[in-house]
Length: 199
Image 1 (tube, helix red, strand yellow):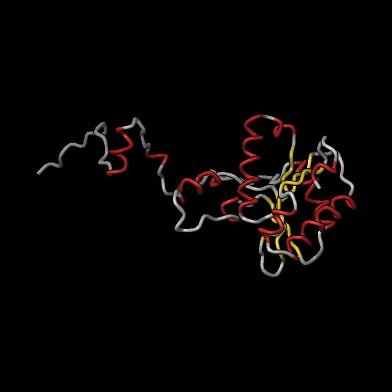
Image 2 (tube, helix red, strand yellow):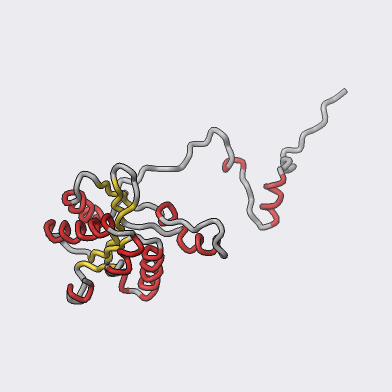
């Protein structure tokens, strides 16, 4: 018996997922799913921007050894919404794609103690200001202190050290929610407003 002729032009059988994707005009090419294909990921050479790295170096220099600095953690890894909260998923989605610039944590327990946000010119945009206000309020609601630092060509380590230690001391001595009510949670360092307005 002769072997049946094979038509190379006939489409290969597809799985259910491929069939569904085709309905939306999404084609899966064989080369897209080749198991031996090299994955396209590459290592970023600059995890922090130059401005972020500059501030990180100074903060690392002035923060005591009993604390550690976490860079770019997801807000959802720092704050959480209790399970029984009405609209839990909506509240989580509001912070799911956002991150803090830096979070100072207790080195022994890794409990977050202070958030530091670096404000460049983009934070002057209306959409960024709305984002900042929401994040500030969410952070305050959780009882965590927030400190905004304006981008500068250089920082005075002694100034940053004093401001950071003041906030770390307050959060350690009092219940967080009480401390937030007594000290403005969103302190801004290096802004145009006089320092007295924020203390």
